[in-house]
Amino acid sequence: MDEIYRWMDDIERDNPDLVSSTIYGQTFEGRNITLLKLGLGTGSPGKKAIWMDCGIHAREWIAPAFCQWFVKEVILTYKTNEKLNQLLQNLDFYVTPVVNVDGYTFTWTNESTRLWRKSRSTPPSDCSCYGVDLNRNFNANWGAVGVSYDCCHNNYCGTSATSEPEVEAVTEFVGQRKQQMLCFLTIHSSGQLILMPYGHPEIAAPNQDELRAVGEAAAAEMKKLYGMNYRVGTSPQILYANSGSSRDWARLIGIPFSYTFELRDTGEFGHLLPEEQIQPACEEAYAGAFSIITAVHDKAFNITNTAAATVTGVMSFTGVAIMSLSLQGLLV
Image 1: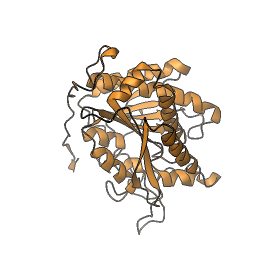
Image 2: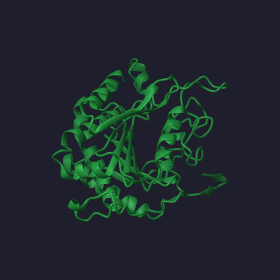
Image 3: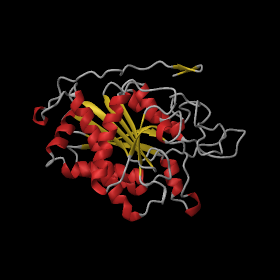
Image 4: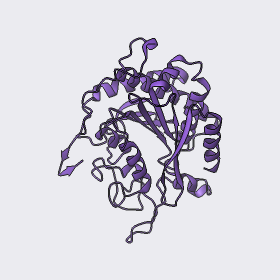
């Protein structure tokens, strides 16, 4: 984690016209949660944004590697890639390489802690196990399905929605900018999936067909590189039902496009992805993320000819209003 912090400092120092950093929260153990903001220009009222976070589950090491890869690729290519330059003129990218800093740090302690998943918060008085599954702690049908109330389980959802400081930091930062946000990308592993809202089997996003189409296009771009198949769908359809995820929370507050990437692989190595797969995994994930970001950007700015990009004429999305859902007595 210290190496990642130093890298972030170097990136900001060496690219002052493109990159800035923000500490937007502290973890349970008092570590900084820091993001990098990438964008060109001073930020007009019409400028929109993309959110990307990695490392919400501690053991998923390929995720923080991808966030760093994404930033590196943007920095190296934005001056020569006309489309990317256009995106950076119209959008700000907010990238958090590691959300669960405490848990990620813990996985580097020794071999026995390598597959730790949760945060490192103190257990409730009636339990002896540390940590909360941060991706079950968001205020999105919290506690409804696919969670445990036993603090010793890996999918323990916490004592209440947004009880964890890491989750509170993300929800406050993103929530304050929800009118600006076009897309919310949260990066995980493994399984080679692109998951769209919602994790609850009885709820469908109002723009689910569009979400699927944009996700399928991204999966097709990812396959072009190394032939890896990424399935697209809701979590109940292609993985399992769950609640309290950041992906669902983002869509519920009105961010029109929200996806979870589950990177390599499909079971051979799982969270212990070998070193030689890091770069190809990041390259195909970059292709998928770039596809989604381009699609949501071009829709928002009504662009059919890439040479005509401006920060004016932002379209409104259908079905973006905050949803008030009542399901089995659960209000979101």
